[in-house]
Length: 513
Ligand code: SF4
Image 1 (cartoon, helix red, strand yellow):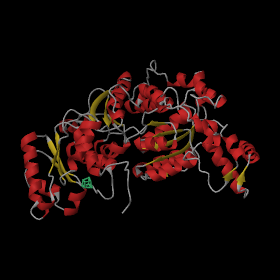
Image 2 (cartoon, rainbow, N blue to C red):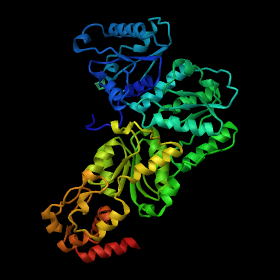
Image 3 (cartoon, rainbow, N blue to C red):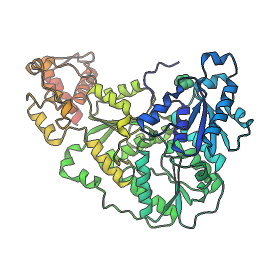
Image 4 (cartoon, helix red, strand yellow):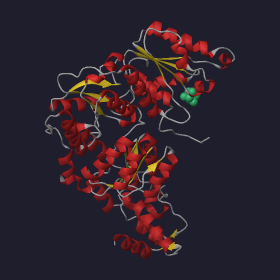
């Protein structure tokens, strides 16, 4: 047992639902207890789809357990076929149904339905949502794809976009455009918007573009082996990665590495003088492996940030993220426990967090600016406007998104110079986030030391003398947490129980060396 309040991923059958809902002409019959239909809301509310997911639940209840749950499943299967007439059906069990061992795959096979029935074995107690999506898509491809004649023109498949994927919709558009500029057409996008008939045509492409390893890698590996389709290894998130991706595609397709960067603004925006204050901002990255690996490179090479910590929640990508961390001289945090993530962030006291919806909550508690780079996400990260992460427009979107939560350069400077202002002060938040600003409490303004200690700035066992505490508050708020921690570590190393102004400056000199 594990005490859990937040989970980064759902159970694997939600991953299977993401594949089924992404596709057309496919139906999912899910053996599940009454109540599991809550998952519909992920698609109809968070992603705002205008139809119910193509999922039939058996919705068994306690009283059904005494009788024949297997028959319930068979009836659901038959009804789903009669009503929806899908081209293919996937069948599987949710966590509770896994325990009663009705074997949905075996039962569906005995029913002689006139369409392919693909059984899913998703171990709900060992694996999670991303595995569920990857495995489901793999099983569908394995069952339906076969060798077919290559298209006359150079084409590729876009593999991995699903329902409920973070910016998958717009990433597909962006990458399709990028490929079209190089003279490469898209054969099939899958699973998003693909039919079982489209899956049968996958083999006609010359190669695969693996957009999201989390949800498409197993299928790509199988297609490489069985259909002779090589696949791309670079995920084109960020300017450098997009250029590498274009070079990789050029080599696979035998075309010139053409890229139309007339709309690309990130490099100049990032180089322009207004971005100077971004240099060396200490950032912490957390999310799924693919987005974290991409974000680390952008943060360091394209924004000039300092990456002080990173990690991912999906252990399938642990190797990748450990490799990236090593390159940055860091140790990756591989965990699905948000309390561990919170602890790591509090310890490092970064100036910015790039993470998931969970990190937004952590950032709020710690008073640190935050932008979202990865699922899980809330409804606002399925925006109406065009907002890819991939390709050149994706880089523009990323620049705006990451800079927005930070206090702007002039205000940062003024906050440092005029800390006692009634309106512009540390606790007021950035002025361009109007609603966050609050008037400074009179009491706090009168007495600097009375300001509540921020989480992430632990007092520890050492005691801060009043004068030192006042001096500390002269340090700009966004680096104060780090200054406090460094000073405490410095004092602790020397066995000093009290921190004076001298200790503060000695520590500063020590760490500046
Ligand atoms: S079957 Fe799984 S997803 Fe459904 S309610 Fe039980 S634990 Fe949750």
